[in-house]
Image 1 (cartoon, rainbow, N blue to C red):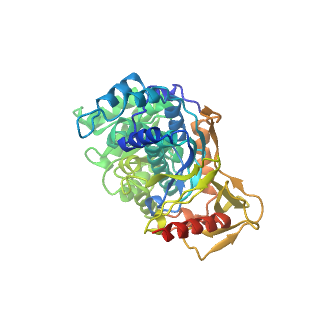
Image 2: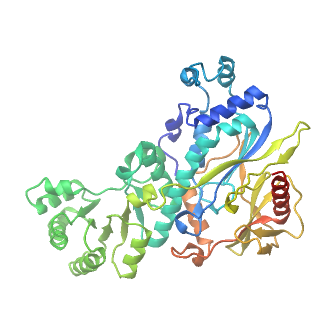
Image 3: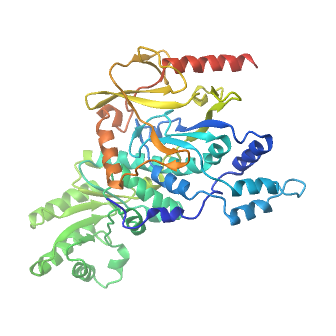
Length: 490
């Protein structure tokens, strides 16, 4: 599916100031100290399993590309930076530095995971290589654009897996965090598996199928519920889902059936009924019996009302006869985990001699010690199933046999045989876009295929089996060496 409208228009104005002030301060420092030409390598990854699950789905890359394609410092941006003052009331930045920013031309190499790819903690979603000041400039916006959509695509995949084989519609625009939060959530939810969205602008921008029924206010606008149903059915004869719980759900279904029978000679079809309150399991079972008895076996039962993957799972286990799910707040906000803990760290820097040396960040928390080098992910397979991933360093020779030390448990190691697939693919080379952006439906299909290649134990909602991710043994040794060197300097 190609969008019927150019979605990049959202980012057609430069968002160079979509950043944190400390990024500009560091860039100023690189410029002042003469380090700005130095080449550096940065990686974006996350540390914790989102929603305490067993996987994540990478998303947001196309949005990041749209951002990068328009990236520049406008006169307005520079005018604003001129107004910033230091503690003495003097300009925070020299005018010559602002002239330097005005000449900005993107020069970096970027490699990334294609959207829809299954990804796990500590694996790089994006690798940036280029002038250190440009890599630094990208930190905050890339985290903003990738973190949120990856979080919501993951939530969507979990919900759609719980609802399978029933379709899920994203219903959350009104509860989303602002305009771009709603638009980005609709896009990411579609990647994760939703068949459509109630958000009309998402349909316009991305070609996502838009779906909708009517609200309780439609029913309340009429003197009688049956009048409201009749009017709506005549307006939407081939696309009619009636919301039946404004007053009494069972009576509402009976009236919907009465309307459907009276209008059937005119070609009317009752596509579905929707429940938005009450005991969804009990009501859906009772309503299914009524519909089937009255000759409406093909009429869908749709449910909404604060649904998430756990409630959907429970309703299915209770025998609910719901066949279409509208999920809003929990999906578009990632309600129980409203942020992915993505980070962006420098991992290698160029020396005066022109080669890269490794850099590492230490921490008293083992999980916060970063991985050095120019990182790539190699995924190994057993038939159609994922066998495990190894993070390896392009700056180091790969040791034979290809072994990896488990990131979660350094005492565990796997030796991989056969040919693996490297996951990071070229997006930019020397600032030029070299990546063919796939359609959103192909991204959605890729995400579905990725989930199918994970074992059932890894995609279950509670206490999932953790997927193996390890450091290639040469990289692991290099990391230990750097840790020992730095701690020896204390």
